Length: 368
Image 1 (cartoon, one colour):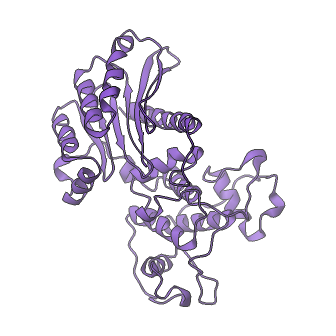
Image 2: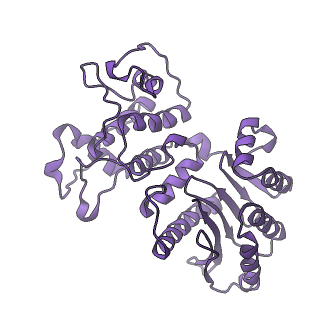
Image 3: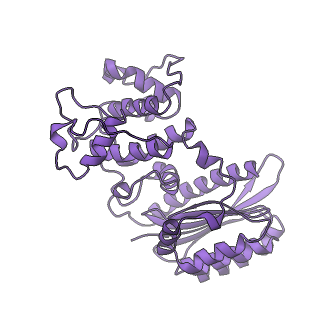
């Protein structure tokens, strides 16, 4: 089942990219309420894993401020099970009475951030790309001090002369470990401002690449009876009590597993197929990976979740049912249907090296 789960994640992310590209070509996007196309996959995953505080689930393309980075870094740090002992309660003179003074003080005592050496933190200043590379590596050093942080190769960038001497190691480390990627022509833009979405993606890659969230990734099954009341309430507020009831009832089947359940997301694995619900700030979506459309419990659950969570769910169910026979015959299918200005239904065929065909089915509702 592990291979199936990995495949499902990859296909869902691919579907998200296709949807975002097609959707933006059909209508203009409003402001910065959603990530750029290149970032939507990892931002969505990061939100689903509880790595992005609500304060940063908007204005994704704006430049990130130092205090905002603190909020992100603390989420990763605390998710790894680290605790912070507050020894110095006033490390910086310029954060007194700041809205996020407590978080900045905590991050300083955790060793995640430093000041200018003169008692200042400059919480509302923007961060450059080379600065955030250094901050990310420093975060990892605090979480995993026993790790080997050497850089094994030498790298050349088209704008290498723009990288400050002190930042070269951090840039190379992040580049070598696929945390930081260059722009076209292998340009790093080290002194350009980092954005909120870039910072979310960098920290998410760090967490995934370094196995910092291993306990979350290894969780094979969620016991719905052990979920906290707070998590259930947050989920039902985002979706509905009926949605929670649908999930609770279906996982009573011994061949169905709930493998993740968060405030705004849930993933269900059937014997042959999978369903994932997600609701980041910019959209609500439901994706399914289908290996065998004959699995009735899967099909009925998918239709119930469509009807219960989307105003255009009825049309989605109709389109789903219209293509069932094609999926049973293992035909190649390419469906892209705009339900209205905010909702899209899609089916994509996937064929592996052994000519096995599976289907990625998605229904996406853009939030206003």
